[in-house]
Length: 148
Image 1 (cartoon, rainbow, N blue to C red):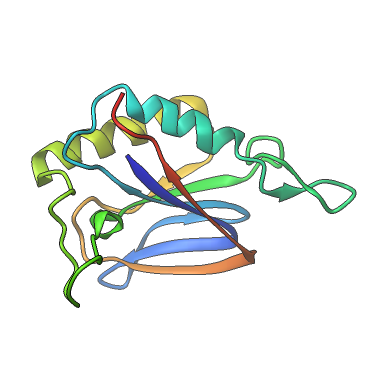
Image 2: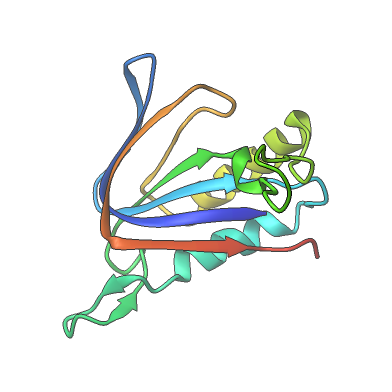
């Protein structure tokens, strides 16, 4: 599974002008399932994200995780993270999971995150979403949890 985590002051997802997910301070997480992904990866990705120390402590060092700062997590499905741009100008998405497989992995990831963290909001899988955010820092971290 692939993820792109952004430390945000706030973020929201809209679909057709309607807000479907919103958080204040926390992590905006774009998530992508690849074809070879299994059930074992979602809990590992959740664990990595919840322990990711990207929030400042009293000394201004990035030493705190989203749970310690009581931040939110906004999850957005993003198959384009699997883009291969090594040749040509049009990205290939051959590494991305099929929509059915990706939906299973995404739903599993969301369920696992909700079980482990209290403040979780989501976009809508496969929808045309508008994501609004204030990237804090900016801090943007790519994460890959390969097939196990």
